[in-house]
Image (tube, chains in turn blue, green):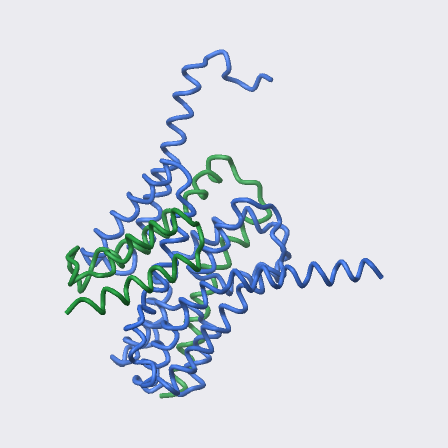
Length: 251
Length: 108
């Protein structure tokens, strides 16, 4: 009896924790989702296609880019390849979360990654720094509510687009950049992280300006993480050279 | 036309899902080397910075930092400060939106 009660309580608190974590994501998704719905209607999507895409693709920038391609009457191959390239960056995020998600079963892992976006990644990776075996209920609550808000705002934008044209006046287009800034700040826990961040930002801005296509996020991330890891490797080597007696696995 | 859209959406979902799923699938139950794990620990800071760079520094294909042409950069300063001081995400988001709204209100 008390066991089921405990279970209920932990379910409720994990659900609540998950919902709280989804709030900033939802705030960021609503304006972009509305914009997607409006544009989708403009290129000839029906409400079903619009919602269907937001549910089973669930990738903001790729969806918006694909609308441009649909508008240009691009072929299936071009749309598919572009989407693939735009979303390739998620391989790195998926790999980065892997060490914290070994406790999920295969089906849960599949479902978790189905809902892995830039935003959900940023929120989860913040939490995973400080915990082992994050509760599945909390993870899926955050993801599902964010996913729902994305699909819902897409549909809302599709039907009522004209009503929301002036949202930018309220600065709502800045919700996503502001969220990324806040999540970045949380990651900046030492000088090396500042260096890696500045370097990645520089590389990605440069590549983006040179219009190298969809690779800029991927390349800048690889470059930044490699700089950070190399720095650690080098510093560790130097430390070991200073303490020759401590090399090898004594103690 | 509509069936082309549906087929495209299905293809898009496959090429979106696989890059999200496969790395986790192959790495989650495996013990990574300390070097690999250390490398991966830099991915969040690197990817967030990479996403933000063009948003904050480039407007219409050009690098610009003037107040009137790139308010996104200037709104980032109070947002960054509040995030650094409070570590509160909702407050940071509201600061960013508020700064952006004020800039729009006072700029031509």
